[in-house]
View 1 (cartoon, rainbow, N blue to C red):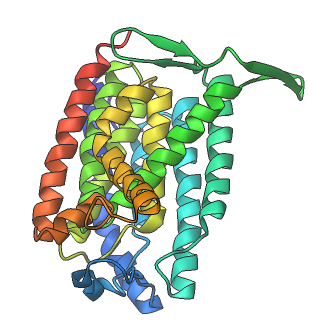
View 2: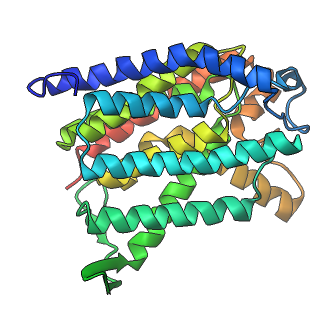
Length: 343
């Protein structure tokens, strides 16, 4: 392990630097490989016309983001059960996204796996994650709110004997974790529609999550969050406008799952939704658009997700991205402030 445990903040910053360096240096090689193999992003036909020039841009950059995160954690952190669980949840969800990207490229369309297939994968991942978090990592099935109020979602639980060990299944909390993990994974995925948007917003949120984990006395999780932020920084060097590569579902689904895993393992399930408020707004804009069109035949936004709405209003892509970064930082700061109001 690199770094001195006597200086934990040094380890956190070191994780950022290593992940950024690894991702930044490996990405050009990966871009060349994707171009050689002819693996390019499929752009949705009903999207903004200016995006059609992005057709064929190398994708699946999330693979290198995940490599950067794992290398950084391996060099800086100690492999505690919580860190192992967070990394595995991220990698497995990233693998689900990779299958989606491969399916999309293979069939030459902007959609890969079907929604039921994605949902089935997220259900399996979130259920396994929750059971391990509760039974191995000792995470209490309680959801806390700012102000000290909390709800015990473990009131409806079952206990099973498996291999001589007791396994507690908190049904309500299990469902809640599924909603959190599936929701954040899809929310980050929906945000990934402009060059640098999802990567920049994730960088901001993960830096704040690193501070949350550090104040929660979970140094290894702080290193994990910092490594994700660093990997996103290295990725942004190649993903800023005009992007040389996209993260694909491999990256966006994995980053959303990592965010959810950190929220559960640091007991900030509610405040994390505020910290990731920009992602929530993106997801809500799609839901509002769909419901409105089905009920009234009218659209609330010029195009959803909401970042496309502002493009339709005439904003340049860079302006949308930078302003959304600012909004994301404001949400993250608010959530971080409310974190200290937890009982």
